[in-house]
Image (tube, rainbow, N blue to C red; front, top):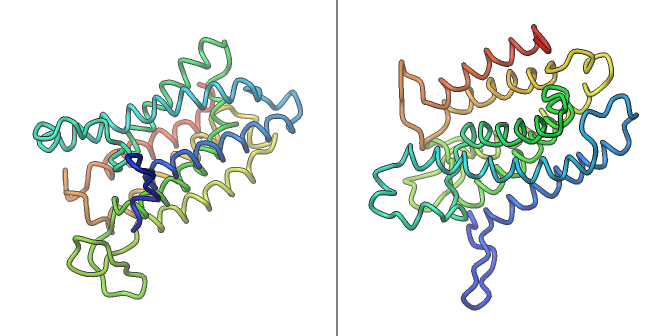
Amino acid sequence: MHPILAKLGPFTLYTYGVMLLIAFALSTWLAVRTARRWPPGLVAINAEQILDCFSLSLLGGLVGGRVSFIILHWEFFVRSPGEAYAIWHGGLVWYGGLLGGLLAAWLYVRAKRLSFLRAMDQCIPFLALAHAVGRGGCFLNGCCYGKLTDRWCGVVFPGQRGTVFPTQLFESAGLFFLYGLLRGLQRPPFLSRPGRLFGLYLVLYALLRFSIEFLRGDQEVWWAGLTLQQVISILAFIVGLLLMGKGKR
């Protein structure tokens, strides 16, 4: 755990924020590079549009993720309203951020008269990559930690009674694998049906997140023995299956 990267006088450089910037820069650079190398008939959104779309999606994702976190921890933010803006301390709900980012992307793509599902098929692997890097920021910040464990993989976080599962690293590893798989499938046969790759991402990430939640130590049971994130994962899984089966419809 290393939440503060450096202090320069009154200025504090937070590791979580730095990792978010690295995630955005790396994923955007690779997405732009890929768009420039693809044949024109395969490109749904060009390199210049990707930069604009990703920037708006980042903003939408930060707003959506932060608003979701505030709603889920309303009592804390009522007592400390100034913390609502301190995203460098952590505190972003992934599914809220995903929804906010997708909404921003949809608005941009619609304004440019592009195919949303084809654009998502082109960009979704790089979202998985950015998420993987961002989870590294969660680990260094000490948020999204796991349950207590005495297994070899346990790590020590300040404030915990013992070693806990490094769930941030587990999820990061799964997301790196997901990125590689999705990039490998970005071929004309798989992309012939718009939304198929995007649907596969939703299905596989939902399975990953649903499983990881059983090891999380900072989540509460919400309904039927499941956390809120697991319930949302079930919904995302269903949406993903529909996209894979129905395609553009």
